[in-house]
Picture 1 (cartoon, helix red, strand yellow):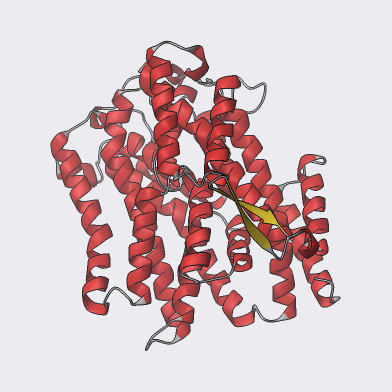
Picture 2: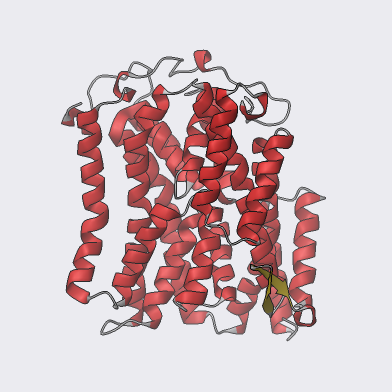
Length: 465
């Protein structure tokens, strides 16, 4: 494959979708991508599969399962994958960048507001309300992802084992992924029906869109076939863009500088944190709060509330973490400038690797579409990810509803137990109201977050929260 892959072509693609039309649609997807990865994937599916019929249900799920396997935000990686399928490398670059840009700008603006006005009762009350509503959103994500991934007793068991292994056994998530993948691979090889995965992703009762009835069709596009020379070129370019800035920071500022630590830490997260945004947050929250002391548990929840109320990947909360880290240790720079530069750095080292994983692996995964063992492996891993999301929901519940959490050790295991006397009654009431609104009355995410923010403001000004 030549450098022509990176240049716009004057000829219309065989599927008839112009690059300009695709760019407009990806901008629309980005603007509507609220609600974390579950909501973003649903928006993308509705527009790209059901409305535009660019790709079919089976192809969408195949790409999604691969993205769930990768470290980083699966929804953004899915956009890169589909963009690459349609318009080669430039299509993936545009789709992935547009997916991130609105959230980056929004979180940066909210981070400024947070550090400048966060001590004001009104702003603190708004974030208190957001924090209380986030738990309902995370629980909704558990059910949404679970309903798609857990189709039988075997996948439910995998999710349960993953949760126990992480929450109680402190097992690293990569080992959980490896174990689930091996189980799925063996089950697929044996032809076990439990790991064949479902074919539907649309709304309940809707008919799945077959690949043959879409613009892309059933065949692989010419550029999607694996090419060693193209893979080496694109991976080399992505690696240079990702790692050279980090190496320069280490060389010029030293390993103890806050920017060097941010670059190294979030680069490590891009490699070792699997399972999408929710899995990443569980690990980053523990490290950023307990190891680096960049922020408090409550501030991590504030950042998640910001990410939930803005378009784009939920993992944009990492931008807020990096901003606070440098804002509080700015060195010779003005704090706001240091925080802004750290936000850019965090976003860069978080998302550049995502393009690498897709451009390097997607041609080979696309070629394996329909392979029973590979599909079974991805299905099993997706089931294990549900347990990870549940782990995050429990972790957030403990820190949002209780002021104190104690570690209890038994049989070599560590379990976080809330101190019941430290329950935050106002947070408990707001969270309960949010859960009832979401699950009983089917109220949308944005109205729930807005209502909880207003309630938090009132409670704060009244001296209750």
